[in-house]
Length: 593
Image 1 (cartoon, rainbow, N blue to C red):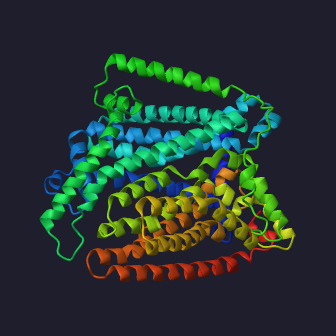
Image 2 (cartoon, rainbow, N blue to C red):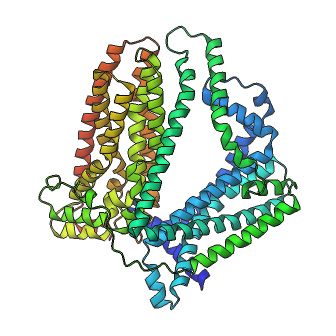
Image 3 (cartoon, one colour):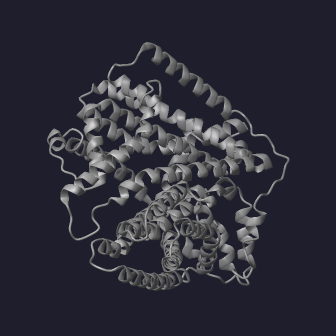
């Protein structure tokens, strides 16, 4: 029965993922595009296979390249050293691959637990399939995990095959490794899913909520501390950056790159500890490929896998306790919703409270305290800026990174984690209420956008104040930071809504599905590339001119004020585009509900 259930649900999810793309609904036979999507995944399998093979053949297994590498950047220098090491230690390359696979299996497990928490299939299975509650949960675990197994098959298996061809391994043994890795992938995902599900299910009690909040804050304190002291180690090397004038000493620059590679190597060396213990799954599989597994280690690992599987199965059969305590922790956050912000729309205020009181926000609220990357970047920036003098040109180069990259990664991480809270189409079928009231989707976007600003900008403001105080930044430069950060925040935040503006999906069957639609993912990828690969580097070009003496500091500041004006008009243009697009969505028939 479980196989029939999984096959049926996977077919539904695949069809829903592809068949509700607006473009394909308008063309004849568009409802069958999911079959073409499956064929496309098979093509992608072979592209990854051949791409990986030729990439590794041209780098790790290219002796001529290793003997004749001349680097011109810190990244190339560090990579060339790493590639040279992997060329002589192929087993480490295999360990690294298996480690990445198992790391993603944990992430997939967490994702599957979130899917189950918001799935309505549990009750359906109990009523219509006549299965017990524990069995229904097991079905949901397996459904979500098997859905993610397709990524293992289409993304990681071709890499395993390519690497096995390059290392000339026995193909029969490789087939065994693929099957064993798949078993461990599913087992680790299932265990992570079960544990995370029970962990989140306990958050409705006061004790567990404050424990989770304290634990997350502690992690962020540790991260910002490590980043700060890591920055202290890097600061002397950064201060000696040689490209701060037109006259470049090539020998001095190459020496600076070599020093940087050594510093980065020293910082990353502690991470190599994960490859030193042979009984860890990724190291065990790599050793198994080269017949270097001690019998005792193999027996211990097999017993551990059996215990792990038995423990996972036992936990899946446990029924979460019914909590009598009715604890609601977000009263203070609700008070941050001033009635004037949403005008006369009582329904908008009601919807915000409904979102805050739902399980979706309860399970994800720590992200509002800033992502791990946010605190890591802040620790580095404070460390760099306090260790550099305002008179040094490299000081402004570091500051330019803070002006743009810091803002984008902050808001992108929060929006990605809370897509079902902030995106326009997260309203689901509740959008009908707006349309019946004579409103359009534009009203939904406005209140979602305002809500995003209210809950994400204060932390950015705290970061600005922290940096300005500790780095003792001058008044003019502080004003530039505040203004550009504010406008960049507003503009880049609006761009994050673009996928749900161009191609909204109000018809999702599970709110976690909002992260799976390929059309939205494509738009999101294009937006990310244009921001990180084009827009932000273009904004940093004036700083590069300042470093090489083409412009003065006063000219640099003037250009940055001009950038602020460009950001302002870009924001206005985007809002006009969004209003024109969303005001047209005023009828139920237009939303494919």
